[in-house]
Image (cartoon, rainbow over all chains, first blue to last red; front, side, top):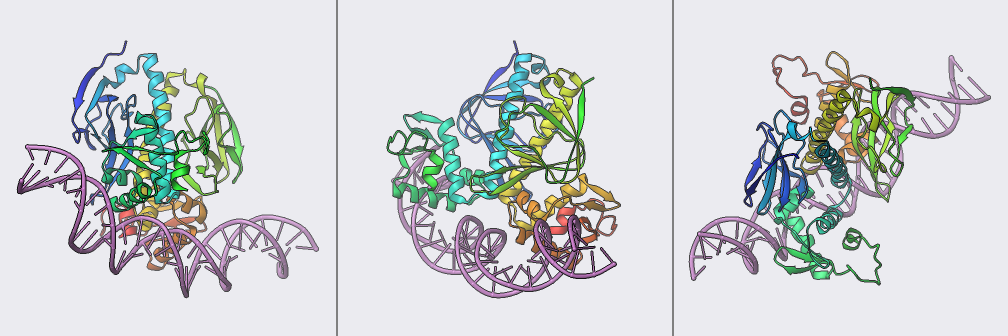
Length: 202
Length: 202
DNA sequence: CGATTTTTTGATTTCAATCAATGTTGGTGG
DNA sequence: CCACCAACATTGATTGAAATCAAAAAATCG
């Protein structure tokens, strides 16, 4: 059995940063972690949002090239990479996570390169609604407008305006602070196959 | 020893496509391969440009979610994924390639989300100049303007305009069709540490 | 309850997209 | 060998989506 220890990190706390030596692997047990890069002049781009079950990175040696920070109160399992990979079950998990992350990043690249602001936000809310369910048809958005903007390659003003418009038009409903719902969910007139992103950005 | 067979693919020929079953792993021996995704309405985003030594993908089962096409005349080594991975040396290579691809994609995401057109092209030419060397300070660009644009999330007109400006200003020199050089290379007044991308986009 | 952070909203600007020709290059067959 | 065709590239004029600049309003926290 691969052994690990559990740690708790607070909202906003850095887990690791660019330039530091990669020693441990981290798996999210609860909460959410943002992974991001920062350019010399301070521009920030969030690469991914890791939720329960996700590994944060796949480095076994050398330095990190990015940052990891808790977006909410978070529990992490910490592993020693090289020794954990000797466990065939862990290796299989590691490889599966790797493939999932690569696929996620391909989608992210396609989104940033070819989609407009509305499509980006719609895609993002769809992803979040699948990963951070908080009730029937409702989901938690564990990020500020600035963080959403940094994920989508937009400004916080643009994100705020699109949220405002969708809420005004009733495409999106705020059920609690940080919690939203898309009313078309379960609406049989629209059909089960309707994607949230298609509905929102229509 | 992990066994493989060699195949040749012509410029423009598809190697695999989204929806097909992933059976084989491919390693580029010579030439260049573009990896891309296509949206329902035809918008295309190139995810990566694979050169000699690179694996094209890391799927061992299931369907591809993207396309691979030869950008030039290309030689590929084809492996059976599951059996190749039983070779520890191949597994190490596979993991290293995986990490390299993830890092590349993080940079790509950051570029698309936060950099302007000039910075994107400068970054790209820097990457290409390291991977496709064709002489002292010169490099081969194995792609059309449209392909460059599809990699950078721009239009071909925008790419063409920036190329034209840099060539006019002498920041970039065309040494042959499809081959360019950045004159600051080896210019001791600028210093060895000068990055091509910094110089071009300045 | 005051102070700070976060969000909203409005006015204006800007960079790249789009629309529209024109020019070049490379491959093919007469 | 050269003329022609198709793919590729350039260049210009104009538009448009999102960024930027600038306050004001809400939410969060000690």
